[in-house]
Length: 453
Picture 1: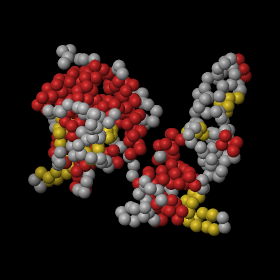
Picture 2: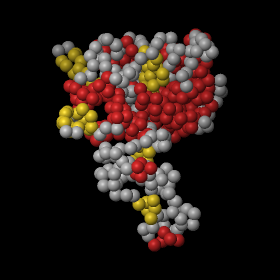
Picture 3: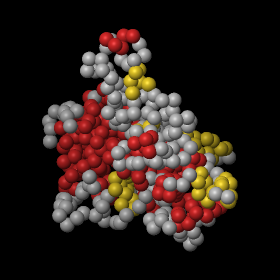
Picture 4: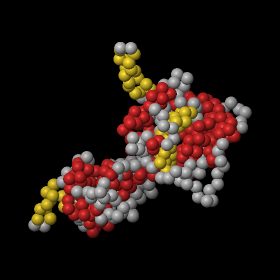
């Protein structure tokens, strides 16, 4: 235990991590780092624009989810360990004038199970309370009069439960996939009456440290790793700001944890719609077809062993449901010609936009459109091709280029040039869908000259 009023940030975070590791078997180092940073962020809720939910989930009981909440309790300010609470209780607790609580909600799966419709108020609070300043409007009756009141819902919330949560909550959460301990994984048994005192000492250390660095955390915008954007940026900004303020190894570990957890979450969050888009991409890629009839698509979907299309509530996917599901993405069936016959079906070109927008690996992994390249003149004025895109060429467009005083302008063809990672092979034009010539494939060009980008 420290005797100083304001311990060094990296040191106190290390101590919190050591305390947690004694009692929780984490699935990864990244999960442990996220847990530590989330606990710290709960001490300065007045500084953040948004607060991520921390969700400990597992497919089976006995995986350490409740234990993770138990050891969180002595480390956070004004903890409220909730199970099966009413919406009125939660709203009143968050509005408590004595201070903002930290909600630790166990068995959250019971809220969104068969009686989910009875718990829409709790779900609404968990969703809206993600943003600073969020309120829930209610009507109250006093005597014979009806009044409106606004109850604040912004609060730090950690959750624990079985399986998954609704996507509206999952996308606002840092997901920690807990699992049962292996025989060789050893941890201490947590006893509140024995260990809470040490936890409270660490809580006081955290409170002292974040009070000292409050000015440093205000209005700070930490650098985000590539791929951490939109709602994921909202989730990780406060945690990365804390890691940067702590210093030491925490900034690097925090960013590694952010990338790993976001990547894992992207592959698990999403309903049937995203799975349908992914399966259609696989079917069109393997068939090399530019258009397929609805009948052929349905047959191929139902033949996928690991997909649900052959048995959705006792029935296989039909043409009407396929059209309805794809219609949400602006994709509609049309009459297509196959040889001398016509039939209703779908074209690859109509699916491309949805694949890029909704499938992360399509938008940022397999194919990346070249939109901006910065490359310096080197080697005494000789043209150098950027290694990440071998098709890019530099041509002199200014007299001063010959003496190296001006950086050459990259010259692109009239169409967009795409770079493909070595493990992927694109043999059809990304614009029209027709097969590419062998020389274009060899040069990693994936649109016909003249096709629109």
